[in-house]
Image (cartoon, rainbow, N blue to C red):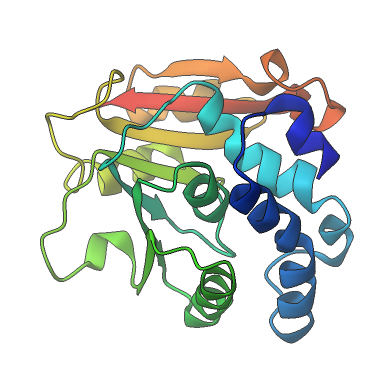
Length: 208
């Protein structure tokens, strides 16, 4: 947890309690349903929580913003962002029901009223739902993420940054970006966090 407080301040006491609770909650749930590798549980705050919060280094979502987390898995980046932005609405979507069982359990334990979940692929959502941003972490190639995000992200927004897709990725992205047909903005995460883990990690932003 110290690594979170190293880079972010001004949390309310309630937010601090929520962040501190994540380790025990994920450890308990991971014993029942494996959503995080065993070795990564020990570095949960660096590799999962801080990684998710990279989005908050650049995007300051205003109250009422609506965000869809595509392929949320165990709740990343959605759960850390929902703690960070308590007045922003998050829909966490995944095609694997047991992962959402973990997400629901943790969200309920933390009393996160700004999270709802949906068991579905984003492209199969039955009702017409619209969001200001789509976020995702290492789920699929950028080409696919943009194809899925485009129908559900509104053209006009309420934030300083234009509506679009924000995804967290690693490695050499040149070919992936080229194949996507997009012209994203790119941030290397070691510009924000000096831990070795972030040297090959990026935040990719495609505007609507």
